Length: 114
Length: 154
Image 1 (cartoon, rainbow over the protein chains, first blue to last red):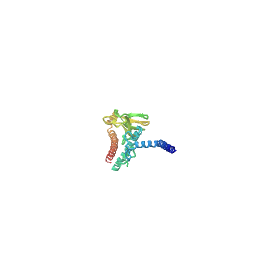
Image 2 (cartoon, each protein chain N blue to C red; image 1 turned 30 degrees about the horizontal axis):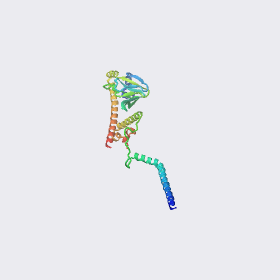
Image 3 (cartoon, rainbow over the protein chains, first blue to last red; image 1 turned 90 degrees about the horizontal axis):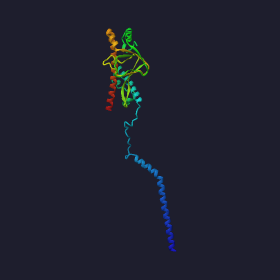
């Protein structure tokens, strides 16, 4: 009788361990399935981000700069020449250093307008 | 036309005689009056409309005409016709229907040798037209140099 009870106890214990193990195993798989896209996103982010904390702003190369259509460039040049001629005529009417250095609104000289 | 910059200071009848030496040419919109490098036998007075003067430059491996200046009624174009080596240094195009009076170098030369006073006044006016253009372009060049220096020193 004692041996029968001991066997029954051991069987119950085994079943309990098997249930726990099964539960643990299935819970891991579900959690892994649920968290997989998040991990992939994080991995992609990590791979894309630089290895340092500051932000690298790449300097735009000549090829990366927006290209101005030739027709627009020619119009800008014409506008620039007209404005510069007008400025030169103003200078020649009453020559002084300030008039020589006067600014125009030409987009081709905007680099020098503060 | 009697008020044209080339005829300034001439008496009306005198100016009319000079104008009578020329031929009136009508240019349709887009017509080229002369090309850079062409032999220059005439000087032109703009009678009506406009003339665009351009120079060729390379833009993205294409040759494009870049605007240099514009002349309107009463102004002189193509003074290379009277100044050696008699080659046009710009291209002149009519952006709209225009008319010019073409004064031939030989006809003017003959008339001026018979009327030296007229020749002197016209030559003075021509020098004034050329000098004005020279001063304007000299100033434009100086402004560009100023900007370049400013950029280098910035």
